[in-house]
Length: 115
Image (cartoon, rainbow, N blue to C red; front, side):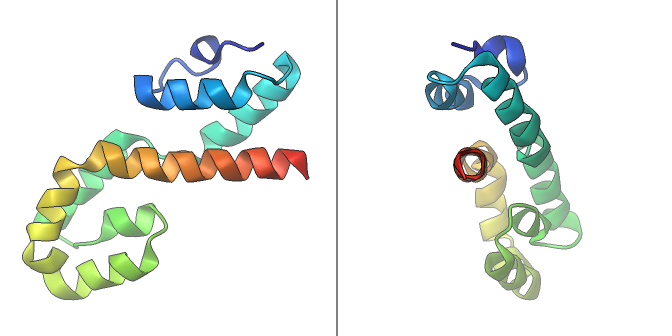
């Protein structure tokens, strides 16, 4: 059983617990392969926060494009971040946005490794 803390010490506690449950039945070699792929795909919550704050003073919706939410990114872009209210809410909830994206990416990596 691989210890995800040793493989990915940069994770938040909530994300670390989730990833640990995914890799608990993997061999060390499989877990290292998972970590290598997952690390290249995950988004850091600080980057999401920075791009959301850029939306307040510059181009709104950049953080939504970064998270793969093209429709919401276009909506934020054309409405000025829903008159800045949506961007402020996203700046407050940046950790949740990053966690949800990372959960989906972890599930994709697991699926990819199985097939």
